[in-house]
Length: 202
Image (cartoon, rainbow, N blue to C red; front, side):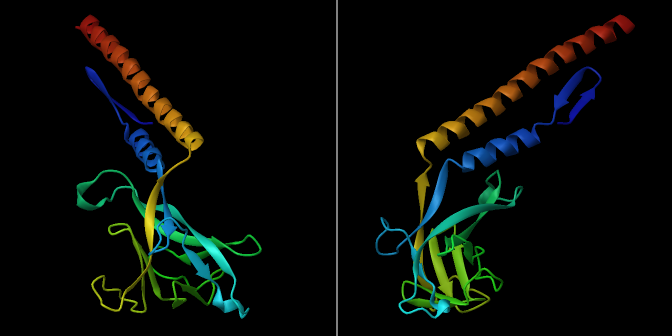
């Protein structure tokens, strides 16, 4: 941590600590993909690229990823998250269905799959829209959010983390806050000592 010292005072740089608190606060709730007509049920994917009939069905999950720690919409402070959609296949391998905007064209991503009856292929838009809480499918690569061809195939529901996870995160936030308080005390003493040293020199 950088601490800038000036004559007659000291000012700390708490940027790193505040970023950590913001990051931890963002972990207190996690988004989960849900069926559009039944928010109580997890969103499922049919991997039709395997050629197996009927195609295997898997439950999906969402992973938030920080994209820009200094950019938030509508003047909000803290990191901006991008939500990515995954499932684990029969070999327990993690497979990405969406990088948050499109279906990636690299493995391990199926060539095509179905969600709620919509056949989705690599390169198609599969947007996890944090503003509306919807998972939107479109074949239009430029993606117009107002297009009538868009299909909502799922929704994102925010769930609180489990009690143990919440306790660990809150404990970490408390520790971080104590660090800030301790640094303030040290800097107050350092500032006082500096003032006395200046007085003795005069």
